[in-house]
Amino acid sequence: MSPFVWLAIAAIAAIVEVFSWGLFTMWFVIGGLLAFVVGFLGGPLWLQIVVFLVVSVACLLLLRPLILKHRKQGEEFEATPVGGTAVVVERIDNGAHVGRVETSDHMTWAAISADDSILEPGTRVRVTDKKSIKLVVERI
Image 1 (cartoon, one colour):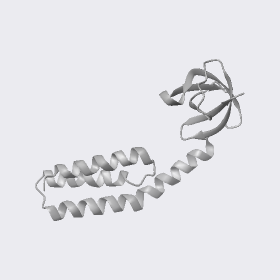
Image 2 (spheres, one colour; image 1 turned 45 degrees about the horizontal axis):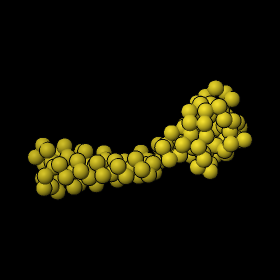
Image 3 (cartoon, rainbow, N blue to C red; image 1 turned 45 degrees about the vertical axis):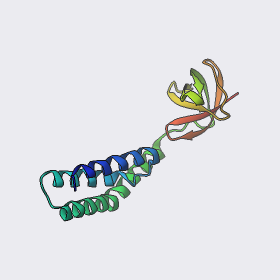
Image 4 (cartoon, one colour; image 1 turned 60 degrees about the vertical axis):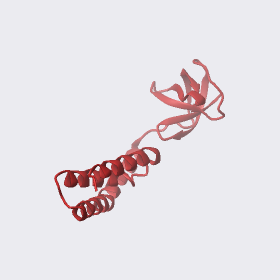
């Protein structure tokens, strides 16, 4: 088996992780990359498989809980503008995946419209929710 199969497995796992944000498949990216190195250096297939499985499962079991704990600590200290007001500074168009607002603390955030309406710059909005790094807003 070509060692480049491991690169393909790592790439597929990376793509899945990008869309899921669950911190589940990223460990298989690491395992796939290390299995690729073993295969590229001439290691037998059984060793490549063992390296892939051991590294992937070990990272999943040991590192995932630490990173999830660290991520939760960051969320606890993050001030959220939900419930506050903001001003649209870049046209919000959900279909075009664009839009930014400025909150009362002069921070700018990526934003989406709660009802899919297009909001022009200067429009005052209320922040109704936060989805990942984007604020969900509605016209006041």
